[in-house]
Image (cartoon, rainbow, N blue to C red; front, top):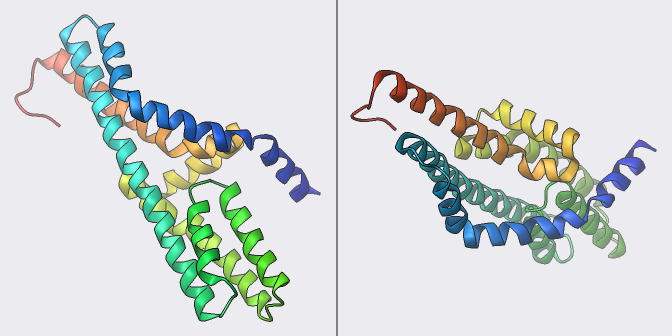
Length: 212
């Protein structure tokens, strides 16, 4: 019952799977214009410098985030394809590629990939389907709680435990959208806090010759 209710909750938010990438494409294309508009509202030089630093750091952070997502997808593709080829699962290359691509969609993507892989294996009368099922469950746990937090944490300068906590908290607060945005939001808050401390120090002690 709980699993059915959880799947129903995720299905209600499936429109976000389409909307979020579309909005992301517009923000990536016009990001510089948005930054210029935000800076135009700031009049004082220290505040403009503070906002410019935050925007530059966020731009770099998002680039790291995208690279981390690509790394996770490529790793999933290699693991899926390698294991299924070794176990002689039908259509191993196609299913492995689908699993790697689905890695871009949090929560729903890996679940759909697992369902598709198991469905194809059962329809093709694959005899070692139980081994395949155990592999999918084990890889999901390793990916979600070991590999992903380390790669994301290193790229976003977050501790792996903080990355795990952020994903879990984001899922509880905002569902699929929270999973999408949890790591970038935490990294953005860290950037704002770090830049604000630098701004406060400059305001209190005067300009610094060198700082980063």
